[in-house]
Amino acid sequence: MSKQAEFAVILKMNAMFADLGADELQRLSTLCHTQHLANGEVLFQKGDPGDALFGVRRGQVRIETGASDGSRLTLNFMGPGDLFGEVAVLDGQSRTADATAGETSELFVLRREDFLAFLEREPKVAIKIIALLCQRIRWQSERMEESMLQPLPVRLARRLCALAADFGSEVHISQEQLGVFVGAARESVNRQLQAWRKEAILDLQRGRILLRNMTKLTAIARNE
Image (tube, rainbow, N blue to C red; front, side, top):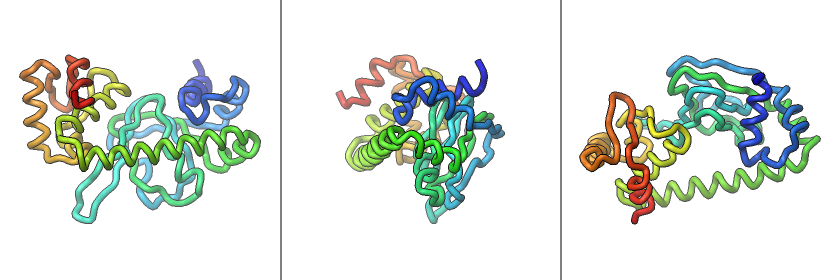
């Protein structure tokens, strides 16, 4: 399968482009090129120009933001098949967060000027984008509510389930990164993970978590 065909598949999987026909997807995919990132390499930083839409072909990209005290907050993980960078590429304003490769990665890149020209020809895609952005706002509201109201086991289980949906039962993430992601100290995260390890819900390896009992983890995530 050519890279353009792979990008067309990724676009089709995304809600923004799901209603496009094969010809439309093919025309859009031909506008993209690829970019390689080394592990830890910064793709863009908060404040950089929003000049492209990205899709992950292989690897992982962390979307992060920083605080004045030097701490980091991981907003999301992007894996194969995920698109990101929609907000800045649409309004032309600066990036609202940082993007860093969590491992060696290859990305599809669609430049803003090419994308906007396509939208002018395909207004139904613009309508889908409005719906997608509303969905993102709802997602952010849910995360804020979750961090304020839900106990750590529920927050942690939900994040692990979400990561498993993208990356499978072997999640490559450190406990420190996971703590930042759920808004908790690494020590608290470690205590909970160790408790789940004793219950055979998961196993812990260096830099990764092996999820053994998704049924139980999903029940915890649902606060059942």
